[in-house]
Length: 403
Image (cartoon, rainbow, N blue to C red; front, side, top):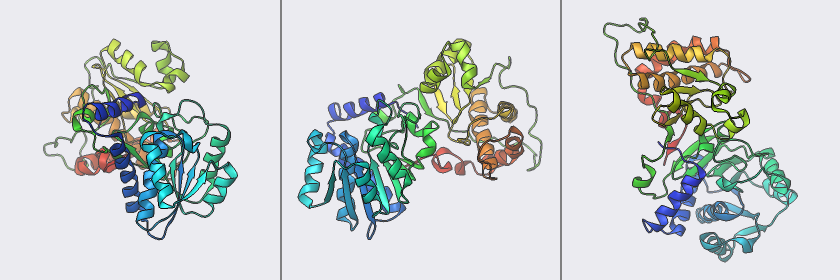
């Protein structure tokens, strides 16, 4: 599945509306329906008490649709209209008007204390505060509202992305909502799947909200989720058999595995600039080297010489520890020995090392993942991929689910 920038998603919206004549109101209705469906499936609606926090723009408008649908199926719903009600336009304005006509309980332009009071009387929060249109750090009253949401005991569903997470890189802009579930639209955004923000999104769902496949599957996108390939069988090998030779997947051993600080020198960018946009420098370096490069971080990125970048969905979001690059090399070499092509070996090796890291993290580690602990889980991870490939592909692994 492709992954988009915020600007690319705006372009998808424009194309859906202008080229395919899909009304913006229908897109908003479908977005709200998707969030409602996930809430219904996850926690139910009837008898539950909901607070929908709607900020400015379309993200707030999506929240208005969710509120209407929750109310119509038996939920007790209160809506915090955080922005000036007169600032809404188009479908957002019309959906707010529908709430007024339906008699929903509206808390208009609440302060942080007002929001805290409303949070105390609900068991489920819908976060439509900021969305992907964030252009600066969250501060002032908005930051206080984020803190109040995080301090509550309510289950949190975020619309599109947890408020405060940068949609283009996953960075936390001052403060951010910690969601239990996020429902995003069209395609996952970079901020949905890159750390550290990805760790705040909880379970991620993607709804295409009736976007034509011709635009969501456009090969013009250069970033996608990394997917492993099935392992070919080893003739005569038992489950404890050795994997075979471990020569590097490229004749010159040119696979590079770097951290952001190690990508800084060859690309002439600061670490901060790389964290703000890891995709561009990775594409530049792989093109220059004509060889794959793995960039370690909260989520490993695989840069390929043709300009594609693959975001690896497996692997603890705790970040890399010294020595894990050698675990990746071991996995890649083993898979090449199994008969995978160089590119397949890199893609699948990074994925399997991530699975091993997740297995190690489930052992109770919360601050780091020593490479030895990850290496110890590598045979088990490899066996899982061999025996249960379908159970480890991204849709099933837990990274996201398409609805």
